[in-house]
Length: 419
Image 1 (tube, rainbow, N blue to C red):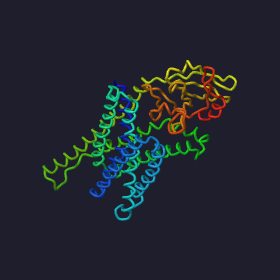
Image 2: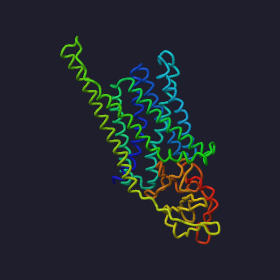
Image 3: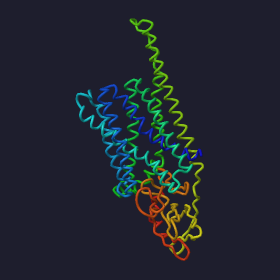
Image 4: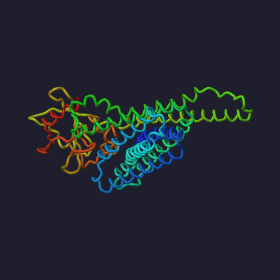
């Protein structure tokens, strides 16, 4: 039960926090300028972004191929990247946002909020969609119930934390607040750049064979970016606690001074609430992820060798409908992993233990589904062996003489992906 809850609680919380925390701090900044005008833009942008992502999900479910997740996320990331730079720029290089860049700043602000909400909104909504898709005919099973509870708890935790962090941010010194916001936006930009490079490598726009060795480290450790968001947000409460106790103004009477002290104490309470929320989310992200990953054991990779140009896997080894991993040592020493799974009858899904987007991070089996280890996307078994998205990179094979025959030349060609 706990494992099923955490499977959706952790990603839902992390995705929501990546969106909510920077936007909460941005709202605190905007409230220092023209509260009513920017507040209207802020919440209208979130509304457009949320309903836009909801519409895209509905279209994707209804038409399957009408909306390419890769194209949609690439476009929103590209637009968000430029909007984020345009929003940050006047804070550092313009004396007055309201007077010199009011119109262009509002457009950039709108674009940034909408595109970030579109991107993360789609990622968040895909979690419950994947739960119901994998459930097939047993939609109201206890498994679905626990997973949906985990999803809702993750969103609730992120939402409550966002409100508390906003309150703490609103009480913070302007320069410290701008610094926290800047670091978080730079972190988001860095993630977006990595994602766009991955897509361009997958589309052969950039030379993947030259970039993969360097990109592999960044791709494998993308999950660490959430901890940068947590770390820089700790500046909020720390700064609040370091503030000096307010001195009594000469003209203030005792009642006025008590009010000043009451406001200062309230700020400290928001700071303490921020620390508690961050510690709780940090615990869930670390221990929760470790617990889920520990209980999901990887299928061991069986070492295989080639005979007469082919690797022969007996059908009786792979006729159980489960994921099977194999590893072949290439002529230059690379360990090339590939997977085989029976899709139904005499149909098999055969591909590398790697994809064009996430690289050689591999796949695991969860509740009878094939799942990408890095992005946690559930594969449709029917599409394994086909190009596109997070599917395993297909490799040539034949079924003959009671064996799945995987071509040695195909594995040699793809060995550079596992350097």
